[in-house]
Length: 116
Image (cartoon, rainbow, N blue to C red; front, side, top):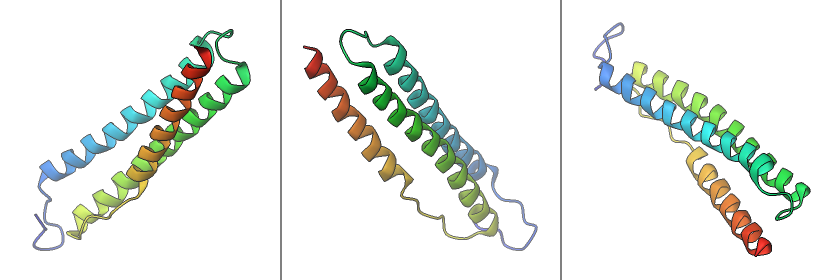
């Protein structure tokens, strides 16, 4: 729903939906941060060398930071578009996130295979 004139109130449902999406990005960033800490501190030292655990943890932490920043940027851009009655902007952040998570999954499979 586009505002009819400047100063027209935007339907709050759109704003709340945008906020829920932002919170989903933040939850994802928190999950990735928790995974980084878990890999570094909870994976047994005799199963995986510290350097490899640290590398995987670092990648996960960097992806977490990227996701948090991308979530904020996306939220602001969509919020501005809603207020202006413009088309919603697109983002490539979801594709980057999916590729990073897939890469971390491949690394995890490799680490588990090495530990067997």
